[in-house]
Length: 102
Image (cartoon, rainbow, N blue to C red):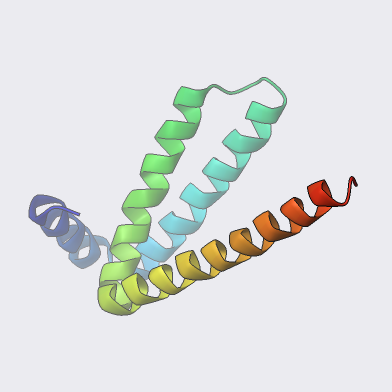
C-alpha cells in the first residue's frame, strides 16, 4: 500500500473505529461472495468482481494495519509457501499418473 493510502486508511480507522471497520470488512466479503455466486450463474460481470475485490482489499489493508502489518505479511508469506509446496506435490502426483498411464 502506498503512503497516501496508509494515511487514508489510518484516518478511516480513527474516524469510524475498528468495530465499524470490522463490520464493514464482513459486509464487503459478503458482497464479493455474492458477486462470485452471481458470476457462476451469468448474473454478474468481471467488472463486478473487480469492484468487490477492490473493496475487500481496502478493508484487508485496514485490518492489517490494526492487527499488525508485519505479522500479517509474515503469515501471508507462510501461506504462499505452503500453497507452493502443495502444488509441487500435485505436480509430482500428476507426473506419476501420466507415467503409469492412469
